[in-house]
Length: 115
Image (cartoon, rainbow, N blue to C red; front, side, top):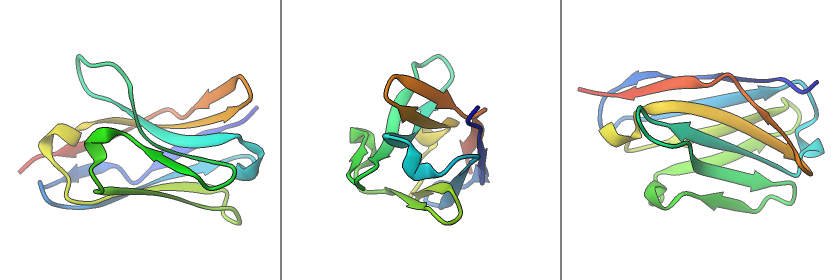
């Protein structure tokens, strides 16, 4: 069974940066798509960014060039570099991996953007 473990969250001031990591128990090129979703209190889970096996990336509209998704196959790790963070980026961030119709989620990690 695939396991995804997120790390790198925490408290950051507005305008600051964080890098989230998602460590996979499997070769990340095994997945059709990997990505990051987030869920803020009282809101639905939404796509932040994803990347397919061919390296094509996709970002939520709210990202506006502030975040970069990347991966390291040797480390079996997916990353999300988040820059110029805003208060509205506060949410639990989830790593996601899909193989055909099979989806795996990480446990989630909290990112809080506050003065």
